[in-house]
Image 1 (tube, helix red, strand yellow):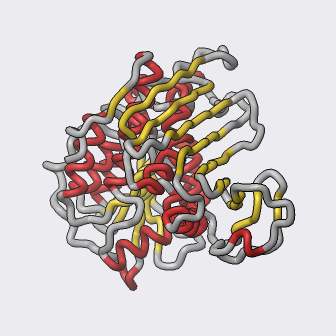
Image 2 (tube, one colour; image 1 turned 180 degrees about the vertical axis):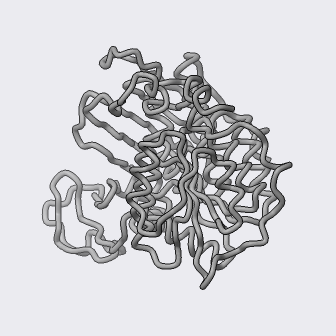
Length: 397
């Protein structure tokens, strides 16, 4: 396909359409020289460029290839790398490079499944950004391919790698909040969520999050992290979901909702609510895990434990078992949980490196990613079709 036609069709971030399976055999390359993992980044927008910058500070990983069909975006991302990567405007050509051991896929949501399958067929390890895949068929096809591959596959739910989140999950599973009754999750922002567009012909390529053909909107791009967390804590997937949303504030031609409100119901009786607004940013990102012994509140960097019961003179013993607890009492949130941890995106990349070195399945893997992706699609169906959607056991065997 000629590049001009590709841009005209606005599905640019797929970066190609033909199957890779017949083009490439399994690469004999496992690691680059000196045990260096050579990375190719497919999709060089905000996320791909951001991860490229982080990789600069990680020993043993080099970005040697970057791919995007928008030249100005590709050039910007290449300038962020200190390893002088080669630029590509077609991901097929990047996958042909035998020196590339692994790829990061940070293209629009709708293209993940196809590109990831092609990358596995080309013998590459894969770090695929969340949400894993769009639609049940895409989720199932990618899961089957990854489960039958001998390559490492990591889903980019970076909070699943966070050592703070890991510690909080351990606390909860060891009974810190008691019997869980609910999760209350939100990710609120105040802004139209748009990127500037240098030319109208690039509108859908740059603002793909606004269009249902390419995007799962706020649910896929934001709330999916918190859905992944709830599934992780409970070791369950939800039985059913109901939800509503709308385009009620930003009347600008978008197709995906500017506010969403969903309830996921689990077999254990736990109900998990997820809210995302773009017209009010109070409390921003927050997860509340509510149990009969207390509540844990967690944001992107910090966590607190608030015990149940009347406690007028709270002391350290009130949070026995909370690692590194101090007297940092917050009247609304409780006692601070102090855990040293890295930026979650950097930790996720370090975990990807370790998984490749040790040939070990990552914590955020194809199955955890697929479960969250199914939950996202259930929520989209519930909102768009105004129905209660139940879990489909036929997608994951």
